[in-house]
Image 1 (tube, rainbow, N blue to C red):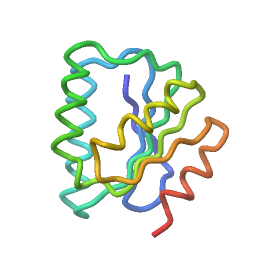
Image 2 (image 1 turned 180 degrees about the vertical axis):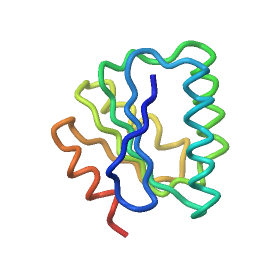
Image 3 (image 1 turned 120 degrees about the vertical axis):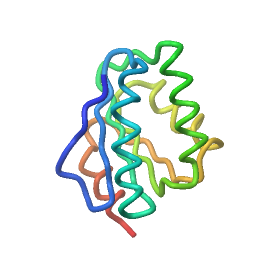
Image 4 (image 1 turned 60 degrees about the vertical axis):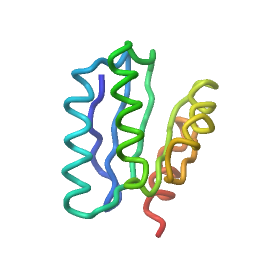
Length: 119
């Protein structure tokens, strides 16, 4: 499931990702990002993982499509989690985007928000 987060810096969208992601999650998530891009042209993203179990096959394809179509439109991506594989995802994602990507431990969500707010 993808839930939108609030209380974030300007030009930043945040999402809590939990459980296993499905195609329906991307049908909600992608239009939110596109709407923000239509306003400002660029956006920062906070992805906060909580009990995240990955993607089903369709959602994995949706994620790949999103990454390739939005790779130049996102300034920064803060990945926040508490599992080693989530930290590893920050490294795996780097070749697929022009965005600056940084991983933060779950206890550092305020540090992640501050980093996203930096110009």
